Image (cartoon, rainbow, N blue to C red; front, side):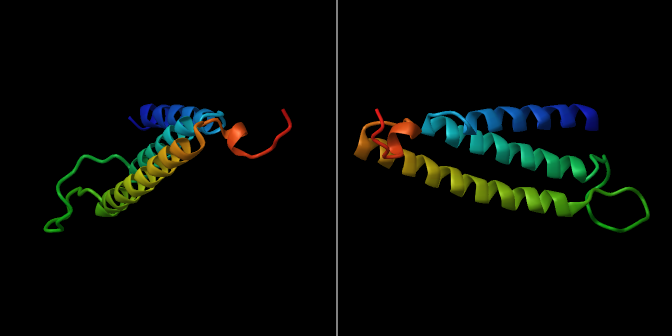
Length: 111
């Protein structure tokens, strides 16, 4: 299962990096979302995908580690806030300047 998750994480990082390096502002936002999802899956995979009981230590049996789950929930909330801020910022820039091309937004008049 960890190998499959590693492949999925690699695909998310590769596509996220490709999207961030594009010229469209919307693709940069999508790339940021893909990278954040890749990080979340990496944290989940590093927590050793165990199947066990809830994290209540009554006996000595296997239990799920609650720390990666808490980190992932916090990162989901922070990622949602950052994504919504980037979408509003990109929309406002498009509304003001009329384009979402990052080369045109740079301000160089070398045409």
